Amino acid sequence: MNDENILETVSKITEINDLSEFLEDSDFDEAMELVIKLIIKPGIDPAAAQKLIVKLQALSTKYAVLAVTYSTIKRDKAGTPNNYKKNIYHSLKEALDKLCDALKYPAKLGL
Image 1 (cartoon, helix red, strand yellow):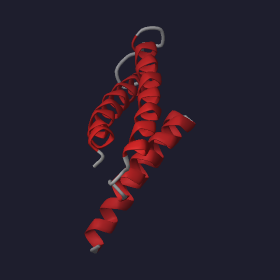
Image 2 (image 1 turned 180 degrees about the vertical axis):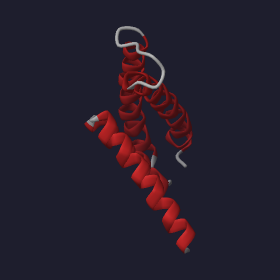
Image 3 (image 1 turned 90 degrees about the vertical axis):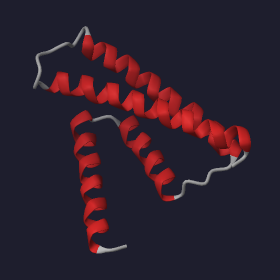
């Protein structure tokens, strides 16, 4: 790993930490931990993939509910913390859904 890759990795970790502090959500920390583990070691056995899909889909559902909450009940102007949270929750939900879709292949095919 060269110096540029190390700096890029540190930057990404710092960004995740900043989001964690902003959201104050232990489930976000758990989701990022699971994602980082998959990045480091992408090979996953079918049984583990199935369990991981259930966990990540549950987290995605939580973030879908929070996105709706911040889009309606806690709606706020652009540039406010509530507006930022709404956008983050929408993005988290979408990203976790895509990850779950990707994990279905090793779960089904035993890759």
